[in-house]
Amino acid sequence: MRTANSFGLASLVVTLLALAPGLNRAADNQPLDPQEQAFLTQAMSDDAAQIAMASLALQKSQNQQVLDLANTVIQERQALDRRLVPLLGRSAVSTAKPAANNDEAMASLQSLNGAAFDKAFAALLVRDHNRIISEYACIKAHSSNLSLRGVARGAMPELRGDLMVALTVLRSPNWMPSQHQEAVATADTHTTKSNAYLGEPLLTSMVTAPW
Image (tube, rainbow, N blue to C red; front, side, top):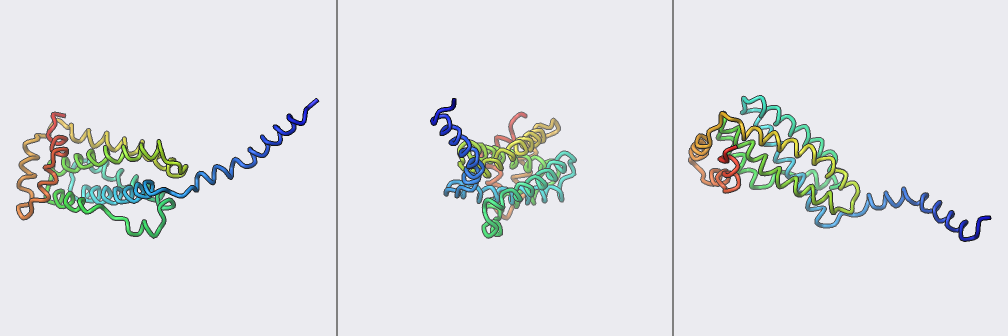
């Protein structure tokens, strides 16, 4: 014979099951904290910057591997934007644009051609992806918003895949680091900012490393 406690426990289980979808929706719709909002704003800016660089690569590169990577970056970042929009809000998305320092990167890329362009483009992707993947991993691990965590989880395999392809471009055997350094040094005689940007220690170390 069931006791009153048994009936009470059964009733509690049924109630919790009934409330579970609502609890999930509540967690899913939990307001974003300032750190999560800042992440989303940065993510949209990163997407805009990478789409701009990849679009330039489609115009300037003759390397099929670079062209394929550029097309992939554009398609994936546009798809990622469509997943970020509902979280960030359309009013904020409408103002999303690359960060100011991306103008310097674009100016440097504009002045390069051939293998020098391909390597600079790949090096910028490697640098940016290392940072971006780290930020997405942090959101995936710590965000309390289920939708945001889901977006981060879904984006990371694509980001890692693009990073691996960019590293492959940097490791291609026909690349001479000295050629890239010379191209960067003479790329834009009217400004030193672009050359300094591509000459910063982190990027220089990636491009000149003995891949």
